[in-house]
View 1 (cartoon, helix red, strand yellow):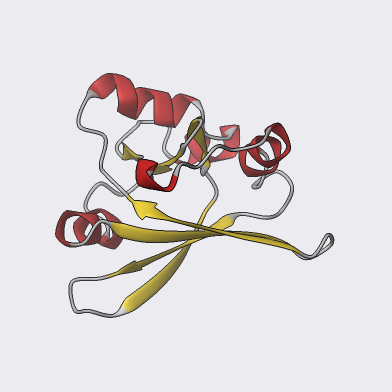
View 2 (cartoon, rainbow, N blue to C red):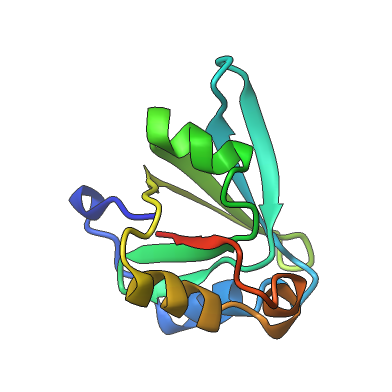
Length: 128
């Protein structure tokens, strides 16, 4: 997910928190609007930092609701929440389905091992 117009630059601490959110027991939450106009929430264990101003994750179901929703309305909100430190961070941006194999592979490869094992045959795709 990216929104370069916001000028986002992630600190090293935040990169560490995001990249380890699943193993820390804090999977990130993504909000989107489905095809019926209903707001939906979905935990994403594969969320990770893709670049200095982009997040990415692996979507295991290539025909899933989030993928279809991005095609119609690519605006997304992602939330990181750590109740122990009372840290809540929202990210607002636009999501795109990785259109090339290299980007999609990178999204898969940079996801936590547990998420890669859940789609060992790589049937899904990356979303940036």
